[in-house]
Amino acid sequence: MKVAVMGYGTVGSGVVEVIESHKKSITARTGGEMLEVKHILDLREFPGDPHSDMFTKDFNDILTDDEVKVVAETMGGVNPAFDFTMKLLKAGKSVVTSNKELVAQKGLELLKAAKDNGVNYLFEASVGGGIPIIRPMSQCLAANNVEGIAGILNGTTNFILTKMIEDGMTFEDALKLAQDNGYAEKDPTADIEGFDACRKVCILASLAFGKHVYPNQVNAEGITRITLEDVSYISDANGVIKLLGQIKSIDDDHIAAFVSPAVVFNGSQLASVNGVFNAILVRGDAVGDVCFYGQGAGKEATASAVVADMVDSAIHTERRRNFGWGDGSESYVVDEKAVLSMPFYVRAKSSQSAVMSALGNVKFLKRVGQPSDEVAFITDSMTQNELVDKLDGIDVINIIKVTNY
Image 1 (cartoon, helix red, strand yellow):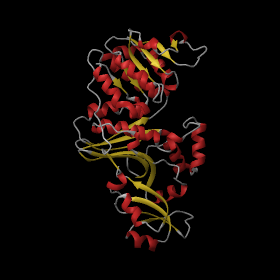
Image 2 (spheres, one colour):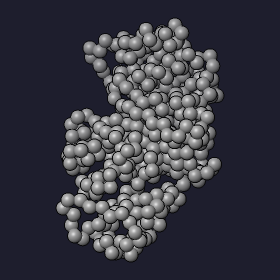
Image 3 (spheres, one colour):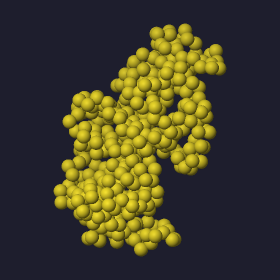
Image 4 (cartoon, helix red, strand yellow):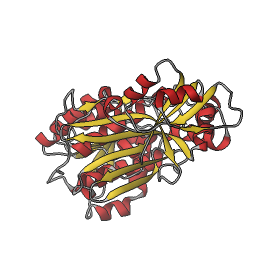
């Protein structure tokens, strides 16, 4: 079967390499159907690349080629990826992607187009890179009502926090190290402000609960306000800080979905996930907690997931997969700050007596070098809005959610 790849960057070039280096195993899984890359779309030049005869700068070479049945979209971004993908689906070609931004923004429209045209739109690589999560959630956990999801969904921020926790590095130094090692972009905003994790939360929430969730519905808070002082205090509580994407079922018509730093206590499966590794914990009413762990990014890991979707599409050329979700609504995702009760970590310029007067009994924390006018503590369960009201008049430095995963 002839296939094409749109975008020859890190992931796209990896897709071509995996297809060529795994011909035997791929053919075995497709029942004898070998995948053969016919076109590679990219506007850049790649002098000396061994695939020079496959390159094209004209999207129509792929769109009008009746031999090409499956296309991998590894371009990134929404435009022109959305336009190209929609045209391919309407032309009767299956499309697979690693493009989380596109799936989060336009997944509903593209899934509908795939259904209307009897083809597949698959995106296993869009959330966990090389970690299988989309297919297990849609198939293996189909008998469960999902109660909640918590995930370390961004390797860059997890690397930074790990360096702060284990090596005592400042946020700024850990970020520079991540950039030097190629884990963070020159402009790291999407990672450190939580936008990358937000897109992945949208996809997971849409899949888990059957209604589309858009990025503008998800509150996203990054890690730029986390300091070594916070790390030290939370260590005293036998916990660590992780950037988590969280999704919780509220009722049949509402969910909470958000990204924020969170205190994870030692003993949790998520607490021991370090470096650039990712983990996604799914809580089902029948199965309990199930954790998926591995490399959330990287050329070979992500390419392997893309190629797996290409294989799946090749197998299902005559019968499309029953896969997707329906429309959401503006009121579907609620503000977690108003509805979810949980403990919170708070650091403030205040006294213990003032805190106890405002909140009653709390668990005070300590650290080496703690100033006399600084307190840190963990509260009882309450909503964040209730906490903010009670802290009125107290000079708060930082507030971090405490998770129960």
